[in-house]
Length: 129
Picture 1 (cartoon, rainbow, N blue to C red):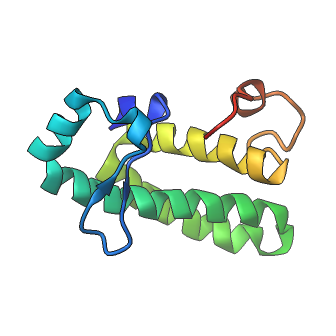
Picture 2 (cartoon, helix red, strand yellow):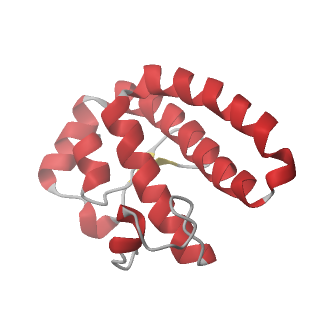
C-alpha cells in the first residue's frame, strides 16, 4: 500500500464500501491479481486510510482557524496516533504527503510551510490527476 501511495496510485472504497476502486489507467494485471488475493485485508486497511485522509484534511483546515487550533490539534494528535498504529508509519506518511500536495493544489495554501516555499510539498508541484 505504501508503495502504491508513493507512486500516486490511490485506492478507494466505493460508496457502499463493497469494492475497491482504482483508476483504470493505473490498474495493472499484477495489481489486479494482488487486489483479488488480499481483498479482505485491503478493504479493512482502506477503511483506516479513508479515516486518516479525512483526519489530515481536517487538520489542514484547522491550521487556518487559529482560535480553535489548540483543542483540535490535541484531538488530531490522539486520532493520528491511533491510525498510525493501524496503518504503520510509512503508509501514514505517504498519505499525509499526498493529501498535503492535493490540499495545496485545491486551496493554493501549503499546510506544511504556509507558502514559504520551504518544504517538500511546495517543491513537488507535479499535477495530480
